[in-house]
Image 1 (tube, rainbow, N blue to C red):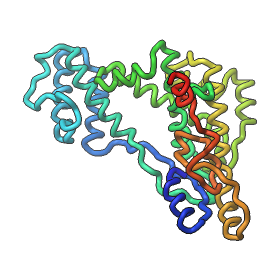
Image 2 (image 1 turned 45 degrees about the vertical axis):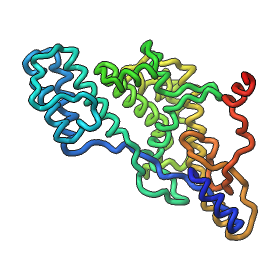
Image 3 (image 1 turned 60 degrees about the vertical axis):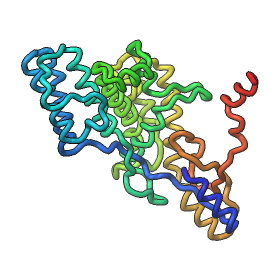
Image 4 (image 1 turned 180 degrees about the vertical axis):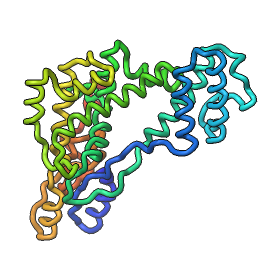
Length: 313
């Protein structure tokens, strides 16, 4: 669904009907070998950072391991292995570790496709979580929906952009906060998906009934409780309700089995409802798939930003 340009070429050259299908869900790449060892060193430093001897020794090991992993090409001003961090202040050591930690997070969070999408097969719970986590990251002001990082950030009196910006600068506190925010987001989305997961570990249909019962007797939504357990108990219930109602709607569209029926109708020469193509993460309006894909959606033009710019001009 996220490659409408190829579909339009087929339409133009062969008058083809192109049936859209879901892109493979993307999962975090994770860490391995030296990078995993480096991550463990960073965690060790977090508990011993104020110890002038052991903290400095761990930072020296972090620098050496980072250079063995060739991270000096990606981390600005990474000290040489001969550099003795005992000679610098705690704040300077924190900055060095923060830059390495931030780079590790970037590597770990790189999106890798989880195999191929299979037409007619319901997604697994993990595949659904991976898709919804990415959808939940983005603000959607046109729908009055805040992204999950912004909601969590506001609950602790911080702006999500500030956390991201400071993390990029290597400020250790914000890097740690970003990691906690990322894990909390995933836990909240998992709470939404697991209530509709069947015994085979797949999401064949969305079932909010048990969630409503649990909320009534348990005193709160599953995702609200997941965020509280992750250390963010003060997230706005109104903002969460708007976001997770939206995510629940996206999940319903993801599990709809329209692709195989659409393909069979096309082979039989029947009418296929048209629908826009594009990335379902940035634009969930392309869901459900299984439609006769087109590249340009006249209903989305002009965008709000373009209209506001036109008024100024």
